Length: 490
Length: 68
Image (cartoon, rainbow over all chains, first blue to last red; front, top):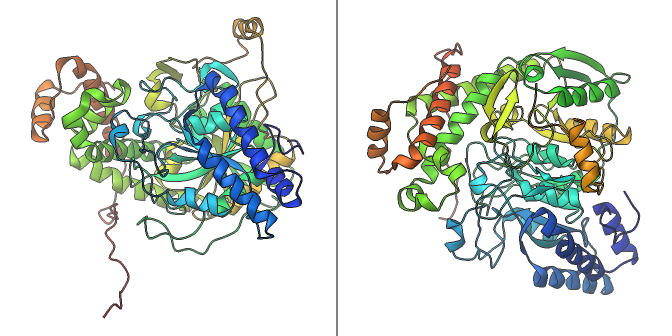
């Protein structure tokens, strides 16, 4: 991190402090950010719309407020961008699709966009995503692939692909995305940034385009845990626009300390270990070793993971297909071929399977609650492997060849299926490909998850390193030497 | 396990919900329906009690209004 508020790697905290103390104007920060988007985005393809006029208008308004002596919010002047399933006034909400471009422009912002603005953040634009969020790769037939800032030949992960790539590349200090089955955690893992998927129902989904109402979560990505917590604080609060949004009191996280003394940490063994490749296993071991001196670290099993993940698959497949049924009837040829066939199959899934999936989901939550009687936190890899090469179709995991697109998020799915809060932390050395570790807490205990994440960041075990620009020759050498993983998890 | 759904099922079920699935899309639909069947088989192995019935989405009425 840097103290220069105009640096691509400036934290939200540095930017907001500089604005408050008069070290920089909001317009200067916004212009620098917009210029970087112009320069960097063509290489990674993270943005689908840049809201230049709006960003400058918001920045001028902040500068006027400061001049007038009015109080500034905790995110004053901090540039941010959102996955393009968030409503943004004046834009059709694409949700990664071609079909949605025919929608009328949004007349109001999504609830969380408004809350970011209310905290003083400045919207830079909308970010690309897998079509209708049915994706773990970051590849999109309409917009092209979103590329990994650490190696553009590799996947960004999805479906919040633009969010992960933009934040990792220094063109959105913080970003918002969604997570139904792992869509925040997979790109956070592959791009090497922090993400927070809160408890199901914690953050309002008002004004966003749904994927699977039973499972959809929204959350932030950032390059530091403090930024993640400050953004999360700005986003919390009840909202009648989302029927699942909780009335629980807002629990501020920005003051959460990196204190893990006495916590009981369960390192997930069994299915989670078996479906993780060696890089993923090593990252989990690194995190466990860092926590061991202050915590009680023990191996645990969550044998409900596989059936709960199967439940999430079927609920997702069926519920999303039902939601899109009219579009599938009338405009199926306009879908991304990589999502179309899966949606069509979902429309044919027997109701009895989905009904049982909902029962298994509840059964799995009870199993997790039992497990949390003996541990405070669970840790597991976020993805089976670091970023696969773009265009890969096969994931080699646990001795099997699986279709990559539906399986890259298999380690993330069990936790979103039962709604648990998860912070994903990046574990990698500068110049290597990142991989994330999930810090999983009991329902409504985001504070525990963020405490552990802050500790790991302070110990320099989990750091969102900036991408290292390398020559083609260096990258070729790494691949030849096997330093950068292919889509291989075992 | 590799489940390959019968085309007769795909024809009948797609007709029931008003979908047309051309031949060129069938291999993908067949493959994903096969994955769904594998997932359903995993669920069948879970020993659920009859009381495990808390189905989502949960139907909830809004709070009391006092307009009148």
